[in-house]
Amino acid sequence: MPELPEVETIKNELSPWVVGQSFTQVTIFDAELVCGSSAEEVRRGLIGQKVESLGRRGKYLIFHLSNGRSLIIHLRMTGVLLLNPKEVDHYARAVFHLSNGHRLVFSDLRRLGLIWLVDYANTVVGKLGPEPLDESFTPGALGQRLSRHHIPAKAALLDQCIVAGIGNMYADEALFAARIHPLRKADALSPEEVQTLYHCIRRVLGAGIGSKGASVDTYVRPEGELGTAHSDFKVAHKGGEPCPVCGSTIERVLVQNRGTCFCPGCQPFGSGPLI
DNA sequence: CTTGGGACCTGGCTGC
DNA sequence: TGCAGCCAGGTCCCAA
Image (cartoon, rainbow, N blue to C red):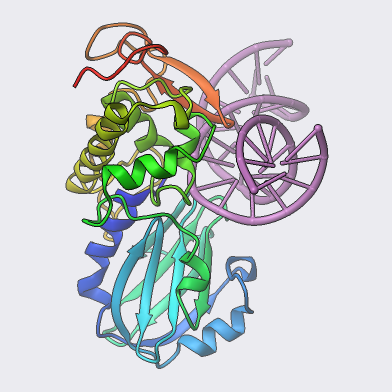
């Protein structure tokens, strides 16, 4: 599941191949892939355009084009971007041919991924909350946003308007690292807990990027290699296993209909932060 | 307005 | 062995 560290890795590894190149041919197999315009409009709008730079906002990958417009890709659950794959299988939703002869294939087993071609990137990503790894993101900013929501802390971390880029895996890892029970209300966290959570969010996401993302499901990097971030996970996807810190059995509950793993020993509902 | 729950999508897994 | 039914989760949409 591509979250911030996975999309950041894709951006970093794709950039050397894509930046400075133009689209020479675009094939969209699945019209449902395109959001806000027709597949033909996207195809015509891309051909001949040069990629000035690659960016990321939350879980969105942004191709900044030479005419000022933006191609935006969201991989959702199972989308992958593959560089020169050996074969274009039936999960391929679109193929982008580049002026250096390479081709980029958008493949998506569950067909939930989306692309946009827009004049202004903000029409798609404008509603997102702050980037958790930006210098401008502070504990105070996080606290102010959390204090406005009477919802479980886990649900708050998944809300892209509160903080951008955190998904199910890294939300569980950040809450575990901060020793905060996922059902604690966001507006009930103490300033100390918010401060701890802030640092844990940044540490967990930073480590994820350092390990090139987590290949727990279909995620692979553009050249086909796996990420290894999942080998550092303490609780995510580990319901029923012993906690690596205290040995308690990791519990799995549903929060906002999302599978949520936490350690009842390290994250008791009534606990405060220990750091 | 805020919050919570369901829909969307499809391969893999479980259980009968 | 076969197959129905459930599960995974990012985001949008609707109802309370």
